[in-house]
Amino acid sequence: MIHEVSGDILLSKAQAIAHSVAPHDHFDSGLALSLRQEWPAMYKDFKHFCHVKNPVPGTAWFWGGASGARIINLMTQDAPGGQKHSGHPGHASLSNVGHALDALKKIVEKEGIESVAIPRLATGVGGLKWEEVKPLIYERLADLKAEVYVYATYVKGQAAGEN
Image (cartoon, rainbow, N blue to C red; front, side, top):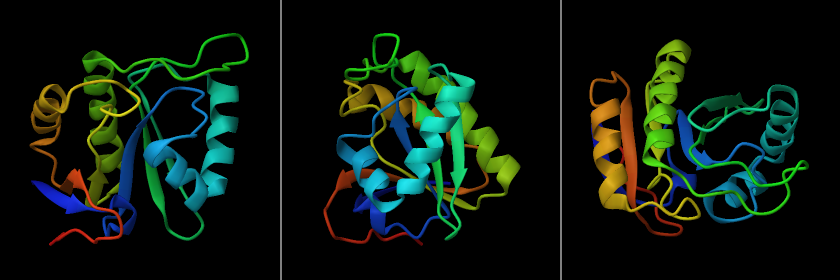
C-alpha cells in the first residue's frame, strides 16, 4: 500500500530508504548528501560498486549497513560526464525512473522488506516534475506487498505519520 506523508525521510521508521542518484554520483547535494553524511560507508561502497560494475541509468543498487540501515540507490539520472565521471550528474528521465522503480520492486520482494520510504524521486537535481513522476510510483509499486511511504512534502526534523 502506498501512503503519502509529510516529514523528514531521515527520521523514517521504514526498513529501507530509496532515493534517486546517478551512476558514479558524488552524493554532494540534497538527500544524497544527507545519506552520505549519515552513512559514509554506504557512499564508499557505492563508489566501489560503480568502479567495478559501471552501472547504467534505470537500475538500482541495494546497500545494507552493519547498523541495520538499508538504502536503495535508484539510478534515475545520467552519469556525470568525462572519463573520470567528474562534474554534475545529468538529468533524470521518466524512462529511467520507471525502470529503477521496477528494480526497486524486485529488491524489496527479494530482500523481504516490509516498508520503504521514498522522496519525490528525480525532482531535485534530476529535473523532473513531480506531476509526471508521482503516477509512475503508483503504477509501478501499487501491487507491492510492502508499505510504501512517499515523502510528498519535506519537513525538516519532523517525523512522518507512518503507520
